[in-house]
Structure formats: C-alpha cells, structure tokens
Amino acid sequence: MRSGSRLRAWCTALPPAAGGAVMAAGILSVGLELTGRTRLSLAALAVAGALWLVLAADFAARLVGDRGRFRAEADTPAALTAVAATTVLGARLSQLGRQHEAAALLALAALLWPGLLLSVVRHWRRRMPGAAFLVCVATQGLAVLSAALAAARHLDWLARAALACFCLGLLLYALALTRFDFHEVVSGAGDHWVAGGALSITALAGAKLTASPVWTGPAHTALRTATLAALGVSLAWYAVLLAAELRSPRPRYDIRRWSTVFPLGMTATACLTAAPATATPWLRPLGEVLLWIAVAACALTCLAFARTHRPGR
Image (cartoon, rainbow, N blue to C red; front, side, top):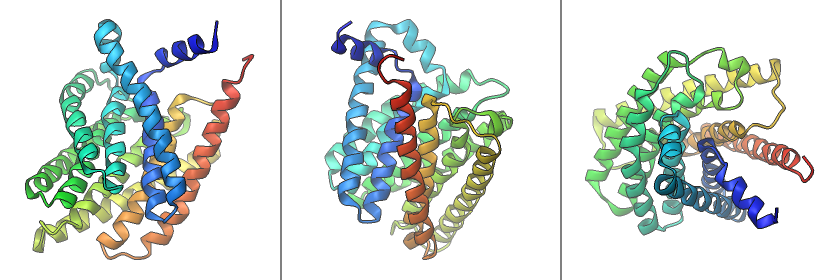
C-alpha cells in the first residue's frame, strides 16, 4: 500500500478520542503565549490547527458517508472532543487577535454541542471512564471562548451567555462525578485525568468571567470565589492522579493519553490566567512550573506515539 493510501486509512480509522490531541496542542499554545514563548506557542498552534482540519474533514465524511458509524460514535463521551477542541482552538485564535475566525469556531461549536451533549448523556452508564467529564469540558469550553470574545468585542450579552455555560458546566461536572468509576484513577488509560482537567477549564472560564467588567460587587466576589475553589480542587485532583500514576505506572501508548496532556496544560493555563484575574500572584509561578510539566508530558506522549507507529510495527 502506498504511503498516501496508508495515511488516508490511518486518518479514517481515528477514533473520536483523537480530538484530545488538538485540545492538548491548543491549550499548550495558549499557555506558552501567556508566558511569552511566542514561537513555541505558534508551533503548537500550527499543530493544533492541522490536526483540527484533519479531524474536521473526517467528522464531515462520517456524517455524510457513514451515518451508522457516526451515530455509534456520537453516543460516546469522546465525541464531545469535537466541541472542546473547536473551542480551545478558537480561544487561541482570539488570543492572537483573530476574532472573526474565533467567532466562526464558537458558532460551529455551539451548533455541535446540544446534539452531541444530549446523545452522550442519554447513553451514560453506571460506571464511566474519565471521558464522562467531557460533558463539562465541552460546556466550559463554550464559556471560555464566549468570555474571550465578549471581552474582545465588548459584548455584554455574550458575557452573560458565558456565565450561563459556566453554571451549566458546574452542574454537568457534578452529574459526571456521580457516574465516574473511581477505579479508573489507578487503572485508567489516560482519560481519567479529565476528572481534574474539567475543573481546571472551569477555573479558566471563571477567571475570564471574573476579569470581565460586566460583573461587579457580589457577583464579582462570587465568581472569584468559585474560580479559586474550582482551581483548588483541580490541583488536589492533580496531586491524587499524579500519585496514582507513580504508584501504578502505565507506560504503554494509548490515544487517550492526549487526554492526560490536555488537563496538565489546562491546569497550568488556569493558574496563569487566574493569577491576575483573582489578584492571587503566587498562582503565576505555579502555573509556569506546571506548564513545563505539561510540555514534557506532551513530548513523552509524542515519543511513545512515534515508537508505537514506527514502520514495521
């Protein structure tokens, strides 16, 4: 089989969980820009954009040409990476000043979100992997991107829509927590980290809302408190999940490992963003340390991927 045919076959076989790679590269790009590493940030953005285009084309092909497979995959929590990846990419473009493109991605994500969310929730089981928390991640992704565009365009109505998504995301996190199989902490293949990452993106959304001039007085205080609380619990999850990884190492490559890199990068980015928004300056150096841990995790995951897919295997 020729290399081009092999590549097309490989892309066609990608599961929805592959969206985690876009989310990971996208959030690392955001975090690197916040720390002034613009060249590295743009490189990560280029990777995220290229992967997003590949997965978007594959998503459209399945929707049009393979409805049976599309419906089957739409029932799984990993399907919501389509929404989450689109919002993360949009947030980076908004950070870059590309508001028109970011708004287009927000519209696309908002169009996909309701149907996928309902399909996933309708097929929840009693014990779910960490991917169950993607219901929260996708919803908070809409909150993050809406808040970013609201600040850039001075759109108060969009800031209020972001707040509504933020509150709904908190509710969805609580519901996912009741379905989460806690045995995944010591046996999960990578997406168990989303249990903490979902709170990190909640904190990021809260930080962006806290920084908005729309909210003053008690509303601002409540948002600041909710942001710091979500960030505090996400850091506690980080410590628990890291300890579990050290106790029960899982070195084999699995595509769900990109759902480990994403929460690592998201926690770092949430700290970096919350530091000025909540007037908690010590969060910035913490965020910088966590960012380089996320970059290292991304590099190791790339290396594991390359070893697994090298010719002859």
